[in-house]
Image (tube, rainbow, N blue to C red; front, side, top):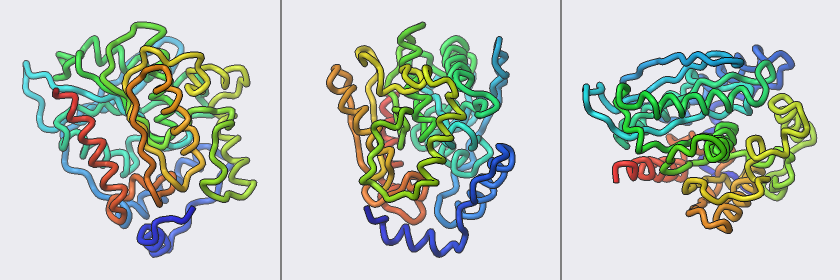
Length: 316
């Protein structure tokens, strides 16, 4: 499938190539954030100056987890507004709140939708494989519900969202929450999500990739879920669940030039078949990372505006 010509021209115009794969995880993360910091000013939009507050949650058996709350304005004592838990992307092994696209996205959504965006700085693989990141996410949800009012959050109006690997964690969290506390979740927003880690639903017609890139995808999965049996569970591969009844309404965004569009669109069909209200949007001409490139893509801007509208629905 062809990339949007304006987006392609902008990417080529940066003159900066994506970094090669590094064997050392820390080196890989360093290269990833350096690349994003180099190209994001040309391809993405800065976020507003939103107030933030960091909280560190202690956990038994897993690393402590930082949750950064992005507020639309300085919180007012006694005033609670809706919130959305957010998980960044990065193949479970890179990415973070220090990436410019993540910070800009969280700040913009908080301000434009008048909600608190609770961004989870989850532990990365391969040092911390499944279920560390998911358990941290569940702990963040429990904390947000339990302490919501003291944080300026309405615990009865919470959504969950995530991008790419973060979309996987978001969907997995809804299954985990259904199996445990069943906290009421208003919706799940899944952006270019990976939902079947057996790789059985990838759409090979979306883009032609060399074998080394397919091998890299397989390695990402192996790093995150090294136990093959785990890959078949709904908290690793949500698409492989036996049923989807009782999960929150889903808004799924896929990119046309991305093999993962197969995961997102198959998940939409599975959810809808079990009666879960679901909407799926394929973003024409965009690659996997394209929804972040709002400066040069009108499709990306429309997608992000739609997500802000979904977040605003928390107020009603």
